[in-house]
Amino acid sequence: MSTPAETPTPERTKFQQWLVDLPLTPNQISFAGLIGNLVAAVLVWQEHFVLGGVAFILGSVMDTLDGRYSRMSGKGTTFGAFLDSTLDRIEEGIVLTAVVMVYAKNGDDINAGIAALAAVSSLLVSYTRARAEGLGLDGKAGFGSRAVRVVILAIGLVLAEGELVDGLNLLDVSIWVLAALGVFTTLQRMLHVRAQLNAPRD
Image (tube, rainbow, N blue to C red; front, side, top):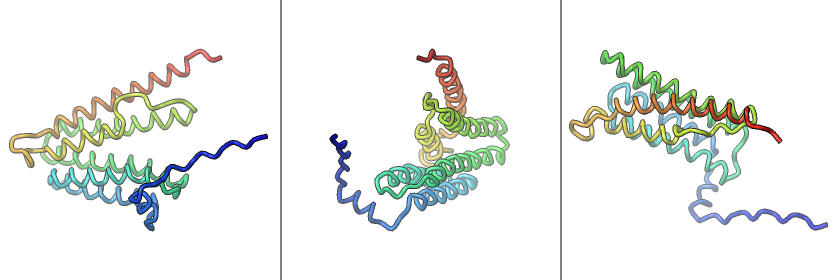
């Protein structure tokens, strides 16, 4: 009886090997992302939008790298995967909370409410996927993935209040788009889960 062939390990580039050899853990990269987003939230709250946007982008890059580093280095743990997902939700929430505070501070109740809706709906997008997968179903349907939301919010922050480009303010637009996208994606995932549950089984 022949034994199954082992799956060959892909060869790493010199840069990848250098990364793997670093005395880092995926959890440390995750916490670096958290720090970056905390800095972003403080800067946004103080209405330094461009700097806040840059910190948000750097923190989000760390969020992307921790999972890839975990897979590439083999240093990942089950708790690390849980921590990564949890910190992702916290980071997005605190930056959007800072945006809500800015609008509230300036007496813009409508946009403060829309930014709050964007924060809540972004959490619902993540929750519906996690709940679906907890039931053994696919929960990845919809357009508003975290990567898409990060790009939209980053553009809104960097191009807010004419700070980078005179006369251009995309923060309001980005918040409205995030809120609408979050609600729509949540509904998409709910319908997707329902369709799977109602599908005929063999």
